Image (cartoon, rainbow, N blue to C red):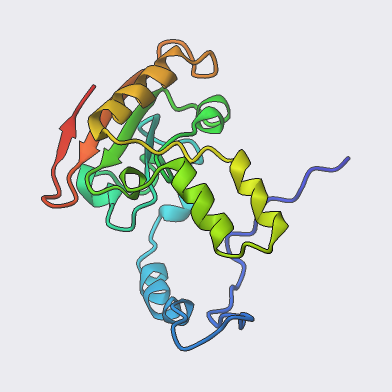
Length: 188
């Protein structure tokens, strides 16, 4: 089987977004073209950045839109893998395929994961359409919420340090980003 061709970094991408079925007055994607044109105009040598992160660092943080990891930590494109999700966990590809040897887990104050319980969310989803049997599948999901921010950081760090899937010798630290002040605090 032939290998997939490498992506063409010089391909011409349209700045005109394709319409979405739900395209309406609140569509944000229409505003992407102008800032992207400015970004591309100042792109410089970024196309030569290596795929593995220069600092051999993976940062696991929340998907919360208030978090700007690059500005907070003084890192730049190409320095680290930034893995974002709700609650902050995942690293196997970053380590095994792309060579990261340090993991920094970042949680943050005011996190939505502190605001609910899994049973409550199960009920909320099912109650949104009680006649829809397909929604019962939500009962199989553990949303991994937490009620103690610092303990959650400690738990995630312990999980990663103990995991056979994380490479031996990996440095794992845990942090809290304060959305109110922009400061970070090392927990572990």
